[in-house]
Length: 427
Image (cartoon, one colour):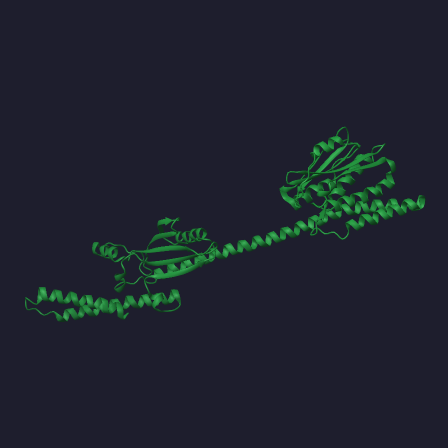
């Protein structure tokens, strides 16, 4: 208040001296009383404007100090995004200000300049009816404010924003004019907008993390459920067969139970967090087929062609056994003379293709179709590998079916050999 009063009265004093010396003093006239009256009115007006400014700043900022009362506001804002994202964020925040017009937006130099038409918080927009008033408003810069924002990169994942909010007029006009806290409001509004956008970004990231965790839990649960749908079917059939053999052929029942123990040794404990290998799954399949050989006798033959270098490749649990079981149930058991099951594995580029083929009934009404087991294979592959794995089932030549699972060769083993298709044709 003292600064504004001193500045205006100093200018008025200079004005009075000039007018008195050039106009009234040569004529011998003394109008000192009028000078004093005008000075009183001018001082009252200046004090009322200053008081209004102080009170409004207190309402906006909640406190009164030199920084809050200043017409020119500076903020240093740290944004936890890389410079390009920080620039986009600050530009969007400035554009959202009421009446803001971005005069210059240079993404390469990371600078934004904007103009804002200032609104008198107590009198509405200045009408500018009087030419003198319009000239004064234009030249003293009370019609518009301006904003300059500069982004400085702070490493790869952070940016620092220097924000300047000030009147459009020159700095010396601050000796005579106040902005009634409009630039303080602009600076605080931009800070709030940035804070809100950063918080929204953090909430979105947190929601994404929670969604990912939930999807992972659901995936594991679905994998466990699909796995659980396969195991009981085989166990029930084996125990039922062993129960029959205990009355008719105790020796073969004992052999079957021994093979079942061997099978369970390769199966338990097994969780989806501990992936199996192709070698382990092959041993499990052999134990399974040994059990079935007791039941089917010479009607079941087995041929295995799996290179030793591929036995260490990670392979989904129970999938090989599912394909083998499907070949027996739908291919060989319905065929009066039985047949052969082939288990083949080949390196194909950066993947491993494992094929289970048979020469059974094939795709016929009597031979059955692709039921729950094969649907589970497809679903488990999709959940575990996405598009990196595949499953196909085709007719074998001259009869039967060939099912192939292709998974990434995570073990990185390289072998030489023919294609899977050639192996199936030979089968």
